[in-house]
Image 1 (cartoon, helix red, strand yellow):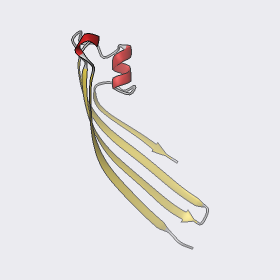
Image 2 (tube, rainbow, N blue to C red):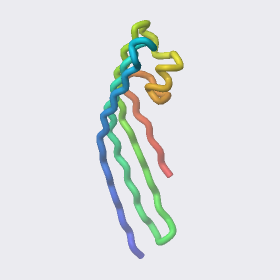
Image 3 (tube, one colour):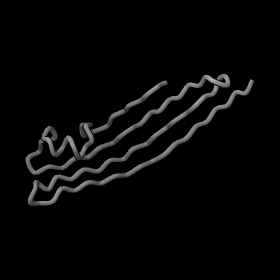
Amino acid sequence: MALTFRVAAGYEYAEKINQPQYGGEKSSTHSINLESKYNVLQNSFVTGKFTFNNIDFISKNGAATTTVSYIMLEGLLPGKTISGQLH
């Protein structure tokens, strides 16, 4: 019976800028990811993934609830968010 445990961590920075004639919105995202996998038996495993996002968004009209902002922010809202999955 082999038990294995693996952990991976990562960081990502992304910046998106809309052209001025289309609104000039800007977003910057800092993401820290932590992923782990634990093999219990030959056919069984548990995985977990957690992400911390810090998102800044600048818009001329100040709204982060437009269609453009939804696309630029990938469905998240500006500020700090934590998301996770466990399988």
